[in-house]
Amino acid sequence: MLPVHGSRWLDHLVAERGLSEHTLAAYRRDLELYGRWMALRGQDDPATMNTADLEAFAAWLRSTNTPRGKPYAEASIARTLAAVRSLHSFLQTDGITSANPAANLPTPKRDRKLPDTLTQGEVDRLLGSVEDGTVAGQRDQAMLELLYSAGLRISELLDLNIDDVDLTERTVRARGKGSKTRIVPIGRLAARAIHVWINEGRPTVNPNGPQLFTNLRGQRLSRQGGWKIITARAKKAGLDGRVHPHTLRHSFATHLVEGGADLRVVQELLGHASVNTTQVYTHTSEARLRELFETAHPRATHNDAQAMDSLISKDYR
Image (cartoon, rainbow, N blue to C red):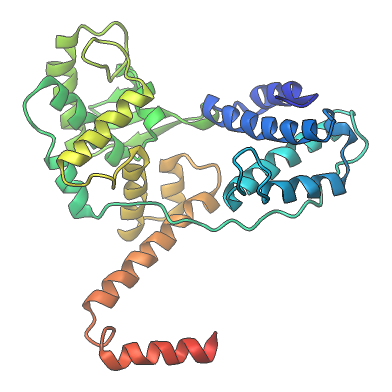
């Protein structure tokens, strides 16, 4: 259940920050967890909490007394505490409390997980496996080409209407997080696949609106429907378990960085609010370069070099 003032805070987030439904739902779950913990202590008002209480909440999240019966992952704890910190900041700003007991609450260090990406060869294999001459194949080809060519989120892809795509200029208008709109260029192969879908495949399903991508009954594709299409096509290409909707977005960004694209440009194309979010793709590129080096360089894999690894690790740990 939500703690007291929780609904007001969520309404504030919608009004002031224009959050997506997905992000808002995540905040609600975090707040419900906070409310559940307070209920166990016989409390329901965050305004009565102090720093020691919040430290106890953080400790509870790492205990076996959680609703899951085991500790939450550090990434989940960091996200939940960020939500709680934001709630208490709102209570102070709104005059409900005079101080913010969460202001000095330590932020857990989150391991930065490198995003899953495909090699350029694997992307070619995936996109080359779709063309089968069917209406579904024309749609799926256009979807996958566009996801990779423009680096779209799956929600942005499925929100597209026909007039969001300009095949003459080869651009697409994407509506991202917080209702922010950006114009992204697309490649010739993506433009050709979209042209085929719009002019040949889409008319046969009698679409019931302006949506670009539909199911075979003419209705706008749902997020779940888009997910199923992508995973099914990945399985057919021999990439089962390797591909989810964000994989092509991650691959798009990584391949641009590997190709020498400026990080600020990649940030704009992805629609990231901060370049710090985009920075992860430089690490992915470095990791791939290291892998290629270890595989290809004759003195990187020499037996004597491997023996030296353990010596260096021992001396400098």
